[in-house]
Amino acid sequence: MNILILGGGGREHGIAWAVKQNPKCDRLIVAPGNAGIAAIAECADLDILDGAAVAEFAGEAGIDFVIVGPEAPLAAGVADRLRDAGLLVFGPSGAAARLEASKSFTKEICDAAGAPTAAWARFDDAEAARAHIRAHGAPIVVKADGLAAGKGVIVAMTEEEALAAVDDILGGAFGSAGAEVVIEEFMTGEEASYFVLCDGETVLPIGTAQDHKRVGDGDTGPNTGGMGAYSPAPVLSDAVAERALDEIVRPTVAEMARRGMPYQGVLYVGLMIENGAPRLVEYNVRFGDPECQVLMMRLGAQALDLMQAAAEGRLDKAQVNWADDHAMTVVMAAAGYPGAYEKGSTIGGLDALPEDSRRMVFHAGTAERDGQVVAAGGRVLNVTARGETLAEAREAAYAMVDAIDWPGGFCRRDIGWRAL
Ligand code: AMP
Ligand code: GLY
Image (cartoon, rainbow, N blue to C red; front, side):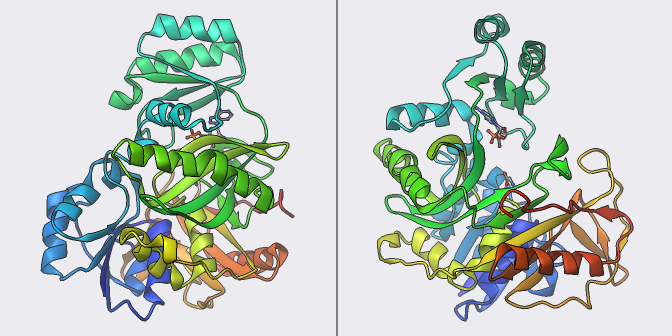
């Protein structure tokens, strides 16, 4: 089977690494890929937001299966273009990708499906939004309706902050993503993510994870795309996961099918859990990054069979072979991230590190220059390990971190503290 993966971050390196282990995989191309991915796959320089260009490339390369990594091509309808061209694709249609691309759409679906989530209201008028905030008080959550690269959510602890967020969003700080603002009740509890595959009808859970959004140890400092993750997430016990499936995920998937936009792909279910009761925070229509890396390490080669089963509509006959183990990934980022950071610093020591089914350094933002790996993004490496226990996985991951010679980088030293 010839496989094309769209994307070029740590998530796509994780997917490529798992797919490559499956004997079914003959040829593997990743577009655009990165320096780490180039070691295990062919990389192709493609505009992955251009569905027609991707379809043409896939046709010429004899691709049998396309896996779409990030949300942007999904929201842009690239999966639709590829399916129109007769390709087998893992990833939702542009219509179904609105579960990530529009916060108010997701809230409407939750209401129709009876899925528990924060109370909400939607505004395109600033004065009405301000009046709503004054009536409800802080803490309160203000969100740009559309895709804003993870920056469109303001958890306001004061009324002033919330009012300023409304002005920012409706004032154009997020472009068209901020044409509408969604204001939500502030939920308390512990957050965790549940990952399920869907084929339009059947839902198959493939794992739980938790990430660390703040840049600093002890969950301090500004928000990031995620500084580390581990799987499984203890707070998502079997009982809580069962409730999340029954009350949130299955009703959502049924409602999407009822509306003629069946959901196919991976659904990232962001949950807030309090007293054993899960409520939906958000959906994403892709794997989390870096959550994907720990899931792929635990799933290994079967990830390809499962994604193919989702794309072919036969998840009802698929089965996950669970390893009763743990995985952790530690993100190494360029100094300055998530603010302005330097690009181009050299990373040494990678060649000497072990790479096997239990230990792997996934590349998130790297490039090759004169035969050396250099930093080419904010989040740069995902140092990932597996163990019988979370403590064992953590020890192995940090041992690799300590063997990497990169003065221009940093990481958190406390990934997994909540679970340990
Ligand atoms: P989102 O992009 O919707 O997941 O929001 C980003 C982060 O903001 C989430 O991971 C939560 O930590 C936080 N958040 C979003 N909505 C709420 C809410 N209604 N109550 C409390 N925290 C929230
Ligand atoms: N790590 C959070 C995300 O992928 O959205």
